Amino acid sequence: MALCALPLVSGAGLSETFADEPPPPVKVLVTYHSLSGNTERLAEAVIDGVKSVPGTQALLKRVGKVTADDLFSADAVVVGSPVYWSNMSGEVKTFFDNWQFKFGVFPEFKMKNKIGAAFATGGQVSSGKEVTMLTILAAMLGNQMIVVSGGGAFGASATTEGDSPGIDNQELADAKALGRRVAEVALMMQRGSSH
Ligand SMILES: Cc1cc2nc3c(=O)[nH]c(=O)nc-3n(C[C@H](O)[C@H](O)[C@H](O)COP(=O)(O)O)c2cc1C
Image (cartoon, rainbow, N blue to C red; front, side, top):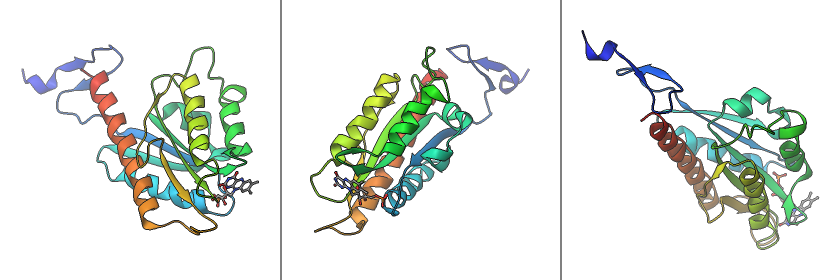
């Protein structure tokens, strides 16, 4: 009997696969709010980073368009917001509130152990980008997600007005690095759970 024909049961006992079958791709949802396009540009760079890692499937959507299936089928979720009054925008906050109101994450903790990460754009150099990323990560931690950084200490960010108008190549490279790191960690989790 050929060994490769034997079914393998994962350590967690949750899935069955064959020894010579590739694992399913890890799914990474990148979602954002953007009114004037800056956060959207960073989101596209995050997606480029995700796609640069073989074995991933990337989905880019505005926060208002995300469905329960998008959220719960994702292995990793990366959320981006413009800075509004030194915090995430109302649309992004509503998105997180809807995890319960529309999608019913509690009491089962349906987002538990998914990978989470954040990115932000703000008009000024020092006026809330890090707070914005940290409050996004805090919402994820409250859902028992596993948060990771990349690009910067708390995620990727860009300054878009004043002395630093527009998004520069370094900021785009940081966003790409964030997407790459999220995909790599999601793949590590997938490998770990199938041993
Ligand atoms: C209502 C409002 C509040 C804002 N508050 C801040 C702020 O507190 N700090 C900051 O750096 N930028 C602030 N900005 C600027 C935006 O964060 C910045 O232009 C951002 O890049 C816009 O992203 P978008 O192009 O994706 O919409 C604010 C913009 C708006 C419209």
